[in-house]
Amino acid sequence: MHLKLEVLDDADAVARRGAAQVAECAREAVRARGRFLFAVSGGHTPWAMLAMLAAEDVPWEHLELFQIDERVAPAGDPDRNWTQLAKSLLGRVSLAPERLHPMPVEDADLEAAASRYAAALARAGGAPPVLDLAHLGLGPDGHTASLVPGDPVLDVQGADVALAGPYQGRRRMTLTFPALDRARSVLWLVTGADKREMLPRLLRGDRSIPAGRVRQDAALLLADRAAAGPA
Image (cartoon, rainbow, N blue to C red; front, side, top):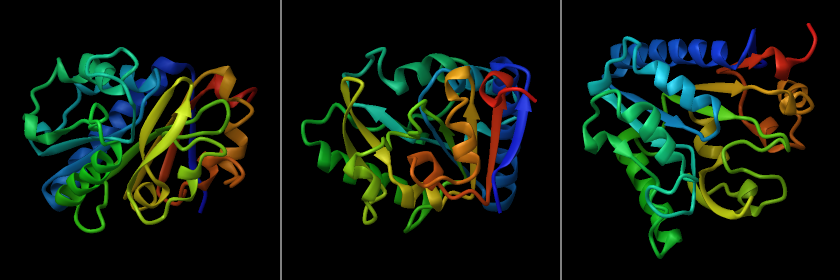
């Protein structure tokens, strides 16, 4: 079963549709299991989506917010995904601190920090942990999360959280393929003409790019017309 694809007019429409989808997943998860485990990637479109999510009907008191990946940088650094996430969502809604799970990338011992984050995932989502929804993006080089072409992290099977090598000037902490593939649902947001070459490869599950290796049978991909190309 392949990815379900919806093509929308522009990035704003993708963000709005994404927010509605997250809210629907949240309500379904809380009805079924009493909580909603949501993990968010970086990129520009998700920040717009999360800002719109603040206005949606979401059972916030049952949401546990995790990260898909994060740059190794100080707290508050504008390069940090958590910094942008805090601006777009956390200033607009009330979430208990114990339900917020930023990746501990400021730690001196990053390997131990990755193990600690995996343990936090397991406390919330079981052993092995299962996310209710994982949000992913697509890079122009075919990467997703911080699973970058050629990085040894692509082959990690025995850990849910691992460290990637330097990419665009920063090391990264990332969820691995096993953690992503256990998610009950995956939501891809893909916008911009620079994704046009990689989007068809993702859609056909081309395993020569990292994004194409993510399980597709419970995934929805929202793309704008710039990324999808001519109709």
